[in-house]
Length: 194
Image (tube, rainbow, N blue to C red):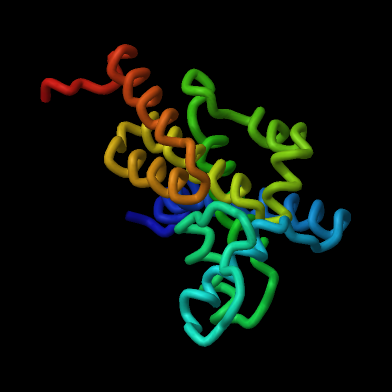
């Protein structure tokens, strides 16, 4: 195999395309963050407080201030704050969202992917601001997008892992889990008799 063939193989690799498109989305979301300015949703900061309450038993007071505890955001945002001593918890959400948007943009158009996904996220200010403010739905939606993407790639087990991560990020995705399963069974994409 010549050097040129190796170079073409690497360039045409799906991994390289995913990383390149993820980087483009990361830059676009970073520009939105720069224009909007840093700011967080109240639940996100409460997640850090809940994590600190779990880790440091000598803290007093109300651990959740009236919000419903969500396992994954508490763990992710709390660990990020604990390790980096930073409230820049929007960066993990921006990275995850960039990867999810890149994965769905690489799907064939017949399966709902394509170039249109470069623009669709930025049409919804609620979605973009949820992502850059590290809100819990901003964490759950990329997990759900990844679940759908992996389901279309026939990676059903991995799809349900991401559906569970979406459920742990923001309760309510269990209904979508069942609807997605029925869609793939009745669509003929998933054969349960194998």
